[in-house]
Length: 219
Image (cartoon, rainbow, N blue to C red; front, top):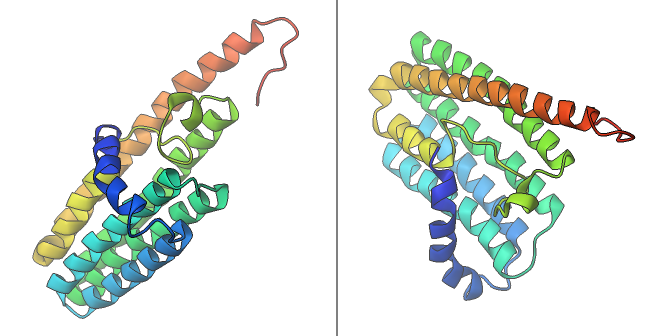
């Protein structure tokens, strides 16, 4: 919900690092290292090393922000880099709650985790397809001047909210069933919000295109 307002300040904070010591580093390499850190966080979470897990999680988020800044500031952007960033980012969102679930090990934790992951599938399909259609209709990141590789449709649960929520997973393991349930509910509302917005936006665009003589309607 707040990512739109935080991206530019984040970019300004990370710019000196991207221009300085990280100037000659491949952003793809940073993305891969971030993935390794996420896997390590999942491993330490499963062993109950929560302080270490929290540090690794926050370091992962730092690297996840840094790779894009390095690419943009040093003109190293690529479609594959943006694609890989999103794919490997999902590993962090899977590894840490899964590790926490194995650490606590109760049935309630695994049931709520399963529900949360199922809703993650729904949400991923919702925002990724909506993003693809917006890019297809030339209403995506480039038109809006966004810093991301593809447009990121607004949602209740975005990157900033996920950082806070996942930190709570690590800090409050005794409340995991409740926290997983809250996360699942908010992500579900995000998906419904995006589906409703897509219904209005995509249908409106289609009707407008159908009114233009000789213009081929986009599927």
